[in-house]
Image (cartoon, rainbow, N blue to C red; front, side, top):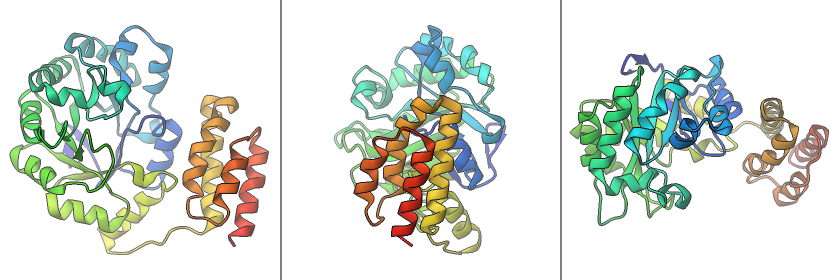
Length: 321
C-alpha cells in the first residue's frame, strides 16, 4: 500500500516511542522485517531554534527507509516553520504527534491535548501539509477521555486538511496504556476516511496483528511496546500474516546476542557513556521472564563496559540454558 507516494511493503510498522525508537532500534527492527519506521517525537520549537538534540533525533540512515520524522507542538506557525529543517534528514514522511499522553507533552498543549481542540489540530495539519514536500500523517488516540471520544472527527479533519494517513491508538489519553485497547474505534475511523489507517495498540505477535487487521480493516498495524526487548516480533508477525506460521521466541543465547549487539550499536551512535546507561532499560526488556532476571538487571544497572555486558549475557545463557 502507499502513504501518499511512498510505498510500504509489508503490514507491520514500528511506533515512534520516545527514548526507545532511536536509530539503533529502528535499524534493528527493519532488519527483522519492519516495513516502515517513525522517529522519536521531536519538538517543532526545538527544531526551529536550532536545538542540537532535535537535529540528532531527526537523523535517518539509509538502512531504515522508508521512514518518517515525527514532530510535536501546539503552534501551527512554528510547526510549519520546522519543516525545512526536518527535511534536512530527507524523511519520506512527516508525522504529527497528536496522541502522546505524557504530562510533559500533553500538559504543554502538544500531543494528545490537541484532541481537545479539533480546530487547532486541523490548522496544524493544514499548515504542515502546506510546508511539507513529502506526505504528512497524523497519530491520534480515541480521545482525551471517555467523555470526549472524538477520533472520527479528528481523522476527518486531518484528511480534510491534507493528511495522507492516520494512525490511531485505540485508547484515550487518560487510559495511557492500560487495557483494554478498543479496536472498534479504529474500525470507525477506517470507515469514516478514504486515506490509509494504521491500527495501534497491543500488537504483540502474529495473532494480535491479524486480529487488528481483521476487526478494523486497517491498512497497517503499528507495533510499540510489543517490540521492547523483542525486535524479532516483526518476523513473527510477517510469518503469521504471510504464511500462517507461528515462529517461537528465539532461544536465550540468541536473545542475549541481539541484546549485546543492540547496545553496542547504541554505543557506536551515541558514545559509550550514553549507550551503557541506556543499556539498563533495554536489558530489563530483553531479560524479562528469564531465571534470575532481577539480579542481572541490578548488575547491568552498574555497567562500566561492553565487556562487562558480554560477561553478564554469558552468565544469563548458562543459567537459562
